[in-house]
Length: 275
Image 1 (cartoon, rainbow, N blue to C red):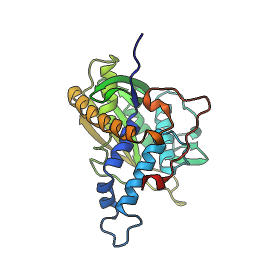
Image 2 (image 1 turned 135 degrees about the vertical axis):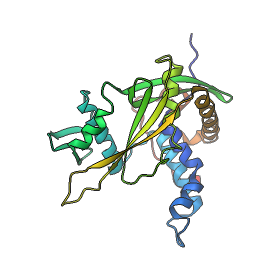
Image 3 (image 1 turned 90 degrees about the vertical axis):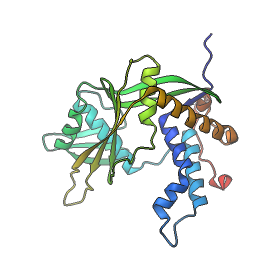
Image 4 (image 1 turned 45 degrees about the horizontal axis):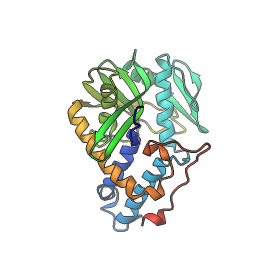
């Protein structure tokens, strides 16, 4: 009988853990120059830790406009390449001028030319592909798994929408290691040469200009399988230490390679427990 891996991590969980590790650096970037910042470094670290644990526990999240906008845009790109739009995104209008998508009660109007320009980069791509692979670490075996956005040949891409951008914005994210590692290690392919964050900087809509236009910024990284394996081992071992120390706060059993009881719904952790 095959032995199940002891832990199961997604790239999103690795990203949330990285934000927690970087909390002091992020606090300095956002509020270090303020005489009266809205929160202290300790409070910000606790917020990052709460966000991480709530994400691990898969707590229901309030709809966030920026996240919904990105989900809607990804759905539009996939639609233009002949792939079905998955709920909860709904396409309300699709013509030569605009494409309108709705999700979670919000409606977004994108310029058709921009959407087609992005979609054109992924003609023939495999989209929303579920991948997973084992990773052996000194703290236990891990399954790395998730859904990659776009896969064409020897290149994997993740579409990011943003209002502000400078190169390197996503350099500390883990998709560029996790997804290529998973498809190569699992045997889904023999080689990935490059990972690209396809960054779409969207204009801010207004009453006068409700249609969002934008610019495309490719943020590309060459892929080295052994190097990514070592980096993933390091971050996964650190995350294992973290969740084992906080096992009493973690209710979702999937991160431990187990099953949740029927009807499981995560409850947000009390931030006071983390201060």
